[in-house]
Image 1 (cartoon, one colour):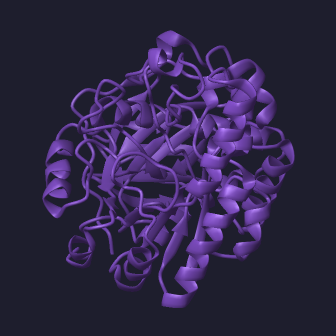
Image 2 (cartoon, rainbow, N blue to C red):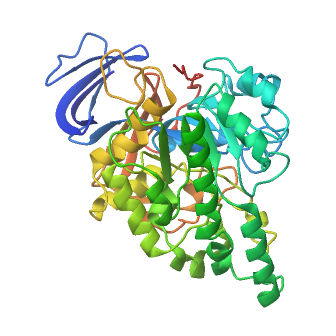
Length: 440
């Protein structure tokens, strides 16, 4: 396919050019390309052509939790949102905490996922030997839940943490919230409200202190052991002091912000309640503003989603029973383009943080950029059109979104995965599937 009259967004620049796809690769980029015989021509008519978003942080819920979502359904929603590659977390059932479980998960994905994919390996208090045995490219990273989580994946033993940080052969990715602090805050809330705790208390329970204390420990351990550390879903201005501004190249310690923490603040608990309950919590307007500024200056390196669907019935429960997490992959790029339309983020910054930086940090081979010879994972965005979120348009298995009724000031028109059209004009293409990511 030849894409003509596009505005290519790549490496900090927006340039008018044509792009030729042949097979699964970008064959040529030039100011003008004559259409070869038999090649379909798509006139971009001045729309923006981006490298597809590489979402380094999703929970697609398979295996074991597939009533909420699965690898097939959630990856369909992702390509509809311009996401071409995902990295899925290990807290499923059974958890991905053995190399056998990791291999089985890759088998599940083959021929079913619409995006390209890689999977995390989960740390526990007793699987250090499995972590040490990981081979290059086998997992995108090892996920360590250092704070409150579920199941047996909460690693609180300091000696185990020390050894994991000292010996892990891959990038270490940490969930940073301090469990004792959260438990004290929960007790305080229960004493005041009983079981009818309002959702507006969530950022007080999952507090700044809980986040800061755990992040400080992760950064301290990484510096002590020389660990390559990535801290996902940062939520507070206070934690930003642990991280350096500037290009991601050469950083030992990096950090991620998620789209909902950049888009929402704690005023929205009033109308959205349990729908935006997530861990760590959406916090204040001042925290949101600080995160936006940190994205602009490169203190925050990567933008992701933490896509984490639950059923509407599960989310409709009272505070302590309603699970944390919300579906996001279908609307992450439209959310970011709304921030661009407000003047809060530049389009080139969005591409840097959501495509270039995750490719660099996780060693994704030949993806994440508009380069000749790279895989043709592309997204065509119309920044002058709109995306109205309706129940009928949702591709999430859970069939709800906190943004239902909202109109985003941008539209994802086409998504290519490995050179093939996976999404076009409101429809997911049949029979187009992603591949396992190559990781250097």
